[in-house]
Image 1 (cartoon, one colour):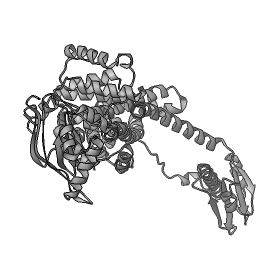
Image 2: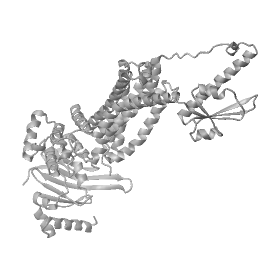
Image 3: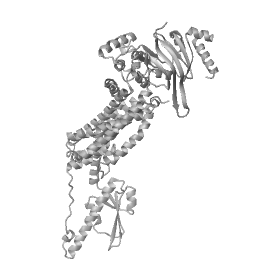
Image 4: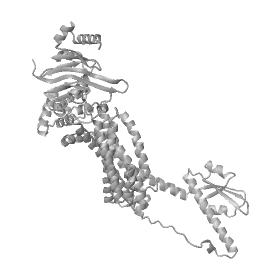
Length: 224
Length: 389
């Protein structure tokens, strides 16, 4: 159904040293694959290990164990090239509020080695697509939340990356509509993977929210 | 590492900083205003207080247990206003008089006490004038005594004594102004870099932009280099503006009567200013690196400010040493950071800096700056610092 794997994660683990709690296993042996063109949803409650997994994939954190490739590139050895193929959008948007959308998107374009000749038409295209032109030269702190979200999307797409990591805390119904496959992560481990249909068949529930809660309670029953 | 990417980050940081009001105040407004306000204000108030003290007819509380002829006349002649009072000491403490005079002892051997309150400049000045008047009276008595015995008053001065200040006016002015500039310069440089450093580190964490920046293709080294460059720029621009403001203040100040005594002696000496700026460059790198490394460990703006407070005190203490009298920059003192720069600025303005101390200061600060720079780079690579949980 989908092309060869764009993301391949094998036995990924991350242990943080916490002064009070000692070693904390944020991610504990996670493996999954995402094919070309596939939308994969990683769902989990707070503290499940989603952020840490995604940060490792974005090469922002180094894993304690395991391996991962992105578009065939090893994320540990080819950090820069991996990041060049990646668009990373977090729920906080991560915008510099004193800059204008034009300055911000240009900055990330330049970081991705886009020069003026390629950057200008690309920004023009994105600004038209997302309706940013009319506020392109207004400082971001003067923009509404909706406008900022569009700027954040333009920033993520400016270098036309083949892989997108969209990190958000949005409603589960969105994941149900959008995702080709869903992985449920809890306490650092993947508890279930499949299409919505497969997960429905496995749990006997129809809505993703119910499926999710059911899988979590099963995981709790397994002893976490 | 690509210098081009570091340059992209540097340019963005500078643009971001120039739009931050706090940075602009500490980097541009403060250095430009502190010098004229401080020097202008100080000169004005000092001149006014001194003139007032000189010209005012101070009330002096006088009590005489035994007569001392000519006392009241001597005080009046000195421009003071003697007033009889039962307790001169209380009169001074209750500020009814600026100084008190009490004559006790015996008629053959009178003893005069002068009361003053050293916490009040006017009291000190009044007491000095009382002392001068009394000495004049004493001398007059001695002359009269000698005269009645038929002895020439020349015996009072068997030889003359004269103190000659060999310091040139330029050196004097350099000493006074160099002390001020040396101290203020390092303080302003530190404050000039503080907000930019916090904004680029703890500020980025607080606004959740750091993660996005690190997920972009720039390497950690390029990120640090860009941010470091921007902080160094902020610190060094502060230094340049402080020196400029200092020069302009004195150039304009020379037209104001109260300033002239000092300012006219200190022509704005371009090589001296350039030498000061060259000396300050490694200090800028040192400050920028420490500020960045320390504020990176904080989770928020406020936390970073509290981390930097002890650093501020340390710098103030080191810089203050250079304001103490008798401090001279030998090769040993020249290896103490901050102190060496403050002291060297003073000595350069006095025209007394030796090439050896300039070289040692520059070299020592360059070594510290390199160490601090590497430390900051190392800090930027530590996950526990970047993503404190």
